Length: 89
Image (cartoon, rainbow, N blue to C red; front, top):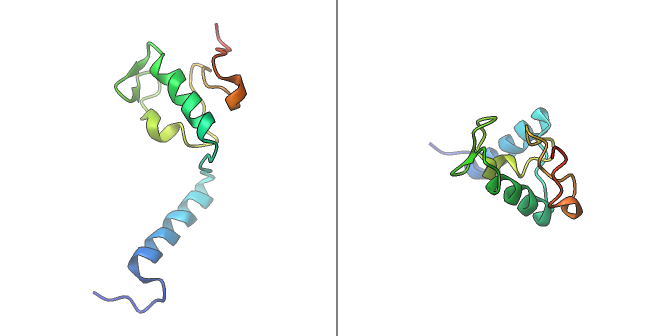
């Protein structure tokens, strides 16, 4: 099957993914230190099991990159500077 568009099939898929993210309000974090701080909080949690949060059922590798997501136990820092501060303890 051929595509007559300028971007080709891969370009069309990328555009579709961007549209879906936009429509769902999914904003990917660019702050790598905040992503790392979120992941460290998950890895140190007793409710984390090999990449998956037992509390909410999400895969933390993906969830930690989404700006509007939050830890169900309130253990994620809001900024990279908040790392190490558990608001629920």
